[in-house]
Image: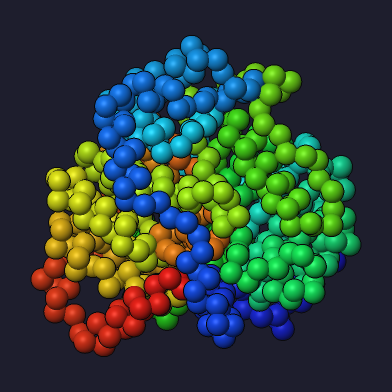
Length: 498
């Protein structure tokens, strides 16, 4: 049976991202695998320049020819697909929207999912309330994929709910990363197995655990919950107790109680709830990963929206689901999409990022955007559960500030969000950080939402985070103490580990 709080007195403290990232880095160094961190392919700057030139020459034609729209009944013919794009453009800033679509289309084939209803969820309590309510309503399936599944009360509650749903005949599966969930008591997953709920760990640390599926450098960093192939949740939030209290920032102006360590709770993070055809794509990602990992239970095969499914128009939001990983062919799709959006920006780039050690190309793109007059602002952490990434990111501050980029450091809470809004019309919420691990070593997924309406909600959230942050000025940064400078230089030397 699942343990109560009193039964867990001897259990280890809940897993957090930092210790797991630190353990992974230590294992890489010990194994002499440093060079392998650069194995993933990242988009070259000249490829972005070429895409921009193509988009500028024929923006409307490029946007139309390279975009496929999938609705509740499957892939759309060109005429209804154009109507979907026109409806999103009618929200405002139509020229900017088509410009970004053209740039994405010049980089690669773009598949958009229409007729979604997307809800922005700030912090853990709002996310878990919505997530548990959706799972309670499940009729056919619940797929859960998370980098971290700890064994605190939140995960215990989810485990009990999954077991109950399985007893009701619902197809259920739980996929977690072996490194991210390394500190979790195996009794949690054994109890699930006894209740008939299949669980599986991605690339076990022990190569003998599941032969043929081992890769210390290759981690599953995605966070996905999908119910009935109709409602999906994705973003930065793990199944972890650190989110239970919400962040110690926000419009409430709350501050952590005296003596309370923000790293133990009060994390600032963001998730989206997606109802509609894009949920089918996220469900397919979980099932495909399960199959590729050779997990023991047999799940129903992945699907795409089809004409056999109900043709219910749940909403007007258009979503692009971008998945990436070291096993995917070609350049990293999330890196390419983010880099292309920054390079294509005309008015604003507003970025909130938990782990910011992005490498030269993204830093140069941010600086170039600021120099051409784009409002480039970053909300970055003032504290972190993994200090090397914090210092590696700060090593870039002077270059960014000198170019006109505005930097704000979030106070009182551990920042774990990975969000992005460009020109108010292209928004991203996902699992991918702007660091080398996310771009070359992890399976990640981001939901890109098109349109001014959702972009406005993202901008309001960004403004709240800025209000809860301390601005970093070039003058004050140049006066920082020398120990910090040494830490930054050392962390930057090993940027490709983080």
